[in-house]
Image (cartoon, rainbow, N blue to C red; front, side):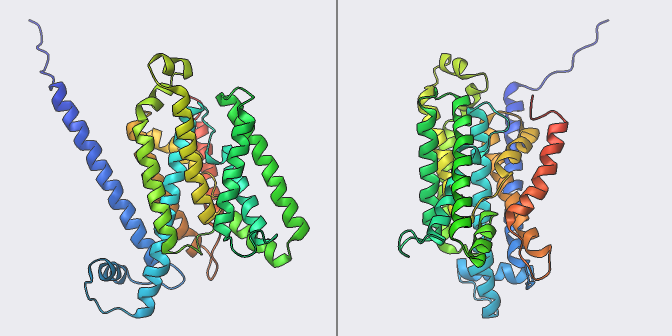
Length: 354
């Protein structure tokens, strides 16, 4: 007389299937990232077969003993692999920082450069390259890193008397960005030659051409360490979704979480900007794309954002090297050309403001 309701699978079984699905997706994403890095090592002004790339990697990692042209081996290992790994670390760090800042500040338009870090790094790099600060003992990357930290300190000091809330941090970041951008423009206009100005502008738009293995040994630990710290506070970030008061009522140490995570986001951004220059839209768009796939739970959102950011920036670097014959475009140009329409699409579907 009554239809029988089909038996429902036990909750433990559903949880197991969900775990397997997430694990499978993570493995697939890591395989995709490895494939994109391998393609990045093969593509360029001189095309090298993918098999040669894999053999070169095997020779350096496991002493496989394949016979490879020394020139091809040098191009792959010393130039392209290191460049791809730095691009992956940079993309992961910027996307991770964007996801954290959007949660902490409860602002869908927050990104790593909101804190004035990029502007400060630009001022530091220009001061070293054009004004000669450090008397030749300070590299461009170190100057950019110091400038980024100075800018972040300025923004933090400006936000403290204004209330230390999300709105105060955002407004302080805008003010800091404008100030340091103005300083950068003033230095270039006042002291740079035409060649210096052209080189600095190319760096400011994002440039991976100069990275080598020393940069890899810095970028990868910073990206991985930042991910570990952010994942440690994933539950606290979930609580921030409902507001600062709600997070505090749930026992979240609001001030400590703010200080630690904003410092981590600022440090990751400062290191990456000091290595490759300013690269926009990664920290803004990638977290929204990750939410489209996995939702808002930060335990899953953070690693997915990092993986998508890494894949995206390595792919953008490939495009920057092959889109024009005999010329390498600044990678920031590619990310903006892709990121702006993507963000407009997300905005039109209302996902940014929900």
